[in-house]
View 1: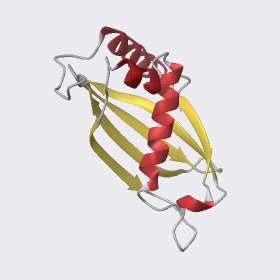
View 2: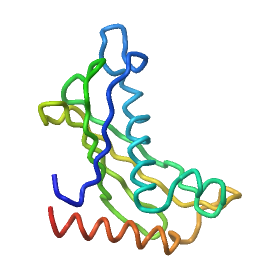
View 3: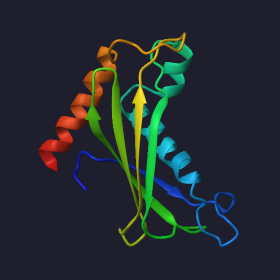
Length: 144
């Protein structure tokens, strides 16, 4: 992990587990999104404000995950959040879910596109968003 990687912590709650007491696979994306919301707030671009203002909307256009080890009820999990790629009007985020031993339990990747309030894709990312994401990407590359 580099110093530039944003870290979000969570404890797996009972309601996120299946009958075997393990994290239900679909809930991994909710936790990735929670980490993304914390990351955006750290950048000074809190999603609730962006949605209220209606200027920058960032729906998902792709999501994928890999599961390496079980995550169970009560596990304390570190989610490392990284900017993976910047495009003209979209960007990709990466998430590493580490268990209490620091081992990779899961990973996820999401791609967000910027759309206008009417739902049409914007021509390019807003300057403030691009600058914040570019700074994180450059910082990760320098320390990674």
